[in-house]
Length: 237
Image: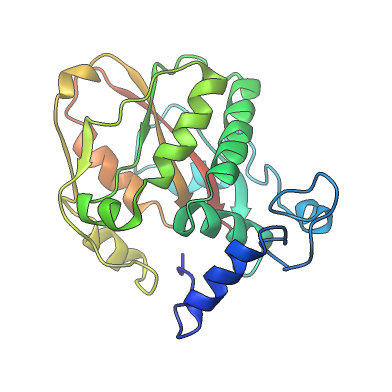
């Protein structure tokens, strides 16, 4: 996923967003009434539950044969220059906790309604490298998990899986390059805390599945571990 392009006027743009918060994050039109972050027209354009929770959903197909997961689902389909991209970018790069809470809540509700995630014991957010976490100030997957936890009534395990290598952006890498770039990136501490559990690995967006696969490579040694996957969005085919 391509991050927002930085340019000389970026600070002015960010200042404008602070001074004029009541505009749609996607189209820039003024918000009216009870609208928050998105105007009604843009909200209606969101690809709600495009991948749903069926066995043949996009995220499940992308990970099939690579990870022995129990269930997989994403709330939305990600396409460039769409409302979904604006939602993901605002959560990922602009620390929009209101959107993270809103869409994490919706993702949690969808998973509960499906019935396919009822056996999950805890939520595990995909971690950031400590340096990136320091620069950004938060982990967007952790924000989603906090909202999901309140809906699903599940604890969050944030300290077992960690990212030990700082990786460069995967935006311009092909599938094989993404896989190579993620080799050995994640590691475990206190693996006994996840033994005999069914975890839900949560990420903001799944593109090729390279990050999810790398997480599994680190987790696979845990005794009797079962894994399910959830993401806010999955890049559409």
